[in-house]
Figure 1 (cartoon, rainbow, N blue to C red):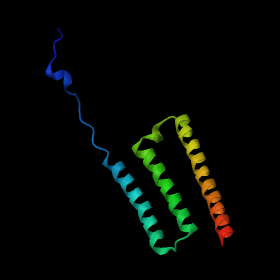
Figure 2 (figure 1 turned 120 degrees about the vertical axis):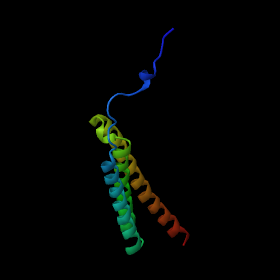
Figure 3 (figure 1 turned 180 degrees about the vertical axis):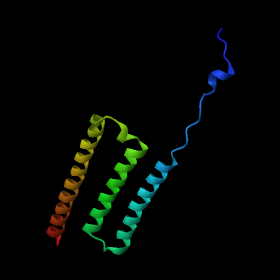
Figure 4 (figure 1 turned 90 degrees about the vertical axis):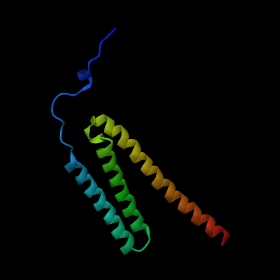
Length: 113
C-alpha cells in the first residue's frame, strides 16, 4: 500500500502574481468598442451603414474575445486558419442569403401590389 504525505499535495515555490494588467487592458478594449457602438447607435439614423458598422464592430469584438479568453492567439497558425476560413465562408454565406432574401422579398412585394 502506498503512503501519502501531506507535502505531496503542496506546491513549492512562490505563487505567481495575477496578470491584472492584461485583464484590465482587455476590459478597456471591449468597453471602448462597446462605447463606439453606442455612439453610432444614438447618433446615426437607422440604415444599412449603421447595420454594417455594428456587424463589423461585433466581428472585431468576437475575434478579440476568442483570441484573449479562448487563447487562440497562442495556438498554431494552422489551427487559427482552420477556424478563420470557415468563419469567413459563413459570413459570406450570410451576406449572400440576406441580399438574395431582400431581392426575393422585393420581387414578391412588387408582384402583389
